[in-house]
Image (cartoon, rainbow, N blue to C red; front, top):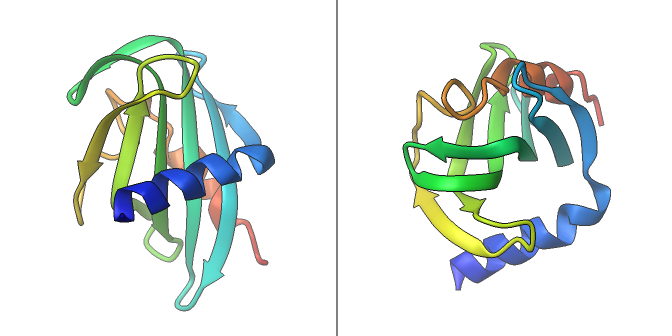
Length: 127
């Protein structure tokens, strides 16, 4: 049930994705549903559309990654809240799901090196 809820929330948010930039490799990075939390924290959906299908530690090739991410704007850290997924094709077909409460490598290489770009954008949100 939780997986269906997460997938439906991410799919529903697809209409309000805002492109925030590109990685050095030309991967398009977008955010959606930014929420301002207590203690200088934010919660947002993050999407990376890989310019070239990416082989990641989770498998591949993937053309897209989406995650619900908690940002600590005071420390500049970002971590998926509990689950994120990767899709193999442009139809959004669900391929890999990963659940974790901690991931030190999220958004760093080899996932595209987008974490600083997204953190800066999300932490600039005040509402």
